[in-house]
Length: 318
Ligand code: DP6
Figure (cartoon, rainbow, N blue to C red):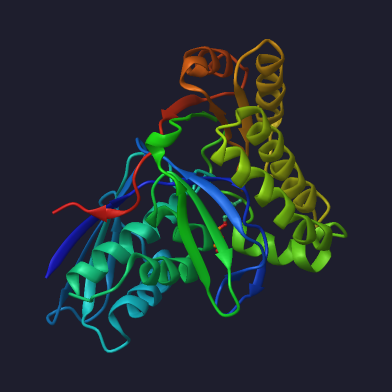
């Protein structure tokens, strides 16, 4: 049987950075994210007895490099004795450039695969399987404001507020479209092994999550802005102080951060966050979105702008 699912990327405001258990890909810290709506990945999965090997295409082109991770994820959903599968993936945004393409990809994959294999699994079961492929993917199964909590041997994930409860906007300034030099997986390991700030990062995460969760509960934009920028800068301080250092920013990234702060000083409700890439995601109230988009779009080095509201978790298309 064939099934297609769609999922959107999510942007972490309190970030997952570091692994407690590498073999099971368990995160060292909890995280809190927002699921987007207008950027998406679609995954079609078809299990077939006539296939001898799994096949993967992305936007119409064969992509064997991703196959081992995709195949392991399919094993997680349908069991290792499963039939081989044809997997077709489509994106409407640049993959591998710090816009969380692996999160939407694995979230859509587990939903499509469970339907195609007729497996009866809960959203949390699927989130755990997606999280083993890519930690952030577990959050893209859920809509709106999502908190991921590490447990003894697993994770739990839940929506703490729906997208409609507080419809923030995300305006992303794309400042580089090349694949990242150091993958987040590798960068997390290097951070844990070499940054003198890593332990402190892990220790403080619970306090940041408490502040962010409360800010979401009370729709307190200023508090969410403050803790999100602080958490982002701590994550990047860990990467910069790893050996060898991992620098995801370029000049336009830094210029966009400054522009966001100027806009906020001028009264716009906006803050930035940055993941394992050079893009700057400006999170704002809807009334500030047009100004933020225009202002970041005019920063030298910004290649293009993307805008999205908040949206639903991964779901079937047909
Ligand atoms: C900076 O989920 O890509 O976006 O589990 O190794 O695949 P792996 O890592 P991944 O890391 C995401 C890191 C981040 C922060 C976040 O999304 O929380």
